[in-house]
Structures are given as structure tokens and as C-alpha cells.
Length: 142
Ligand SMILES: [Zn+2]
Image (cartoon, rainbow, N blue to C red; front, side):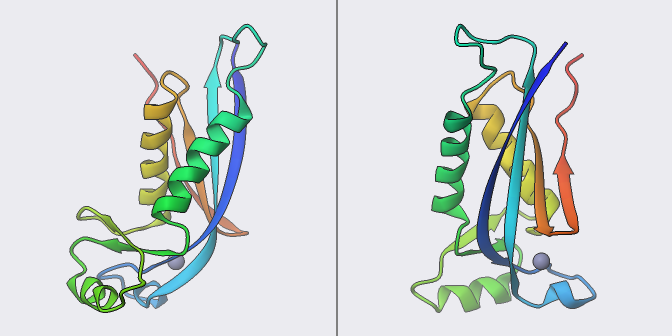
């Protein structure tokens, strides 16, 4: 038996995919939606798996600080980094050696959620539009 709790945070950010053949190679932005789903079999003394407010606050605080109204960039994307660094107001978040895809974003948020809420196996979906999302599913413990 297991319980699942789900919270959602939306934010605006720009990105582009380095070496991609197609329109995602152009710098562009989305209103992203991140869904964080945690699961576990034990409830606390209040009858909660986790307080929705605690997980939502933790995720939103990190996203607001690092991604919201920022530009997500591959650390190997030297042209994009040079352009962004010429804009003093630009908020830039680097993904080390990987494109800032919805998949990479979902993995990043899942790592963050599992650090903050250990043992709750966070699954993260990052919606790039109303019709498509990428999901990161943690490995099942052996
Ligand atoms: Zn995109």
C-alpha cells in the first residue's frame, strides 16, 4: 500500500537545444509546469505523507531563485553563454554538458526533491506545453 501526493509549480523560462536540427535550436521560452509526485507507505502523526505546503514551498523557492524568468543553457553552448553574459540583467542557469531539455529539467528537480524529502521517491514531470511533458522516474530500490 502506498500514498502519493502531488504538487505543481509553474514558471517562465527560456532555453534552446544545442546542435539540434529544428526550431528548438532557436532561443525561445515556455511557461513550464513542474509536477512533483512523492510516494510512501507511512503517514506521520498528523496523517500526512508530507505537508503539501512544505514540498510546494521548497520547490517553488528553488525554482524562483534559479529558473523563473531565467535562461537555461548547456554549459557547452559558448555562443549562447557569450550573448547572455553581455546582458547584465540576464539570469542564467547552466546545465553541465547537457541540453536544458524538459527531461534534464525533470531530473534536476527530482534530485532536488529527493535531497529535501528523502525516502519519498519523487517523480517529476516537466510540462513544456499543454500537450507534452517529460518525466523523470526514480529507480525502484532493490
Ligand atoms: Zn522549448
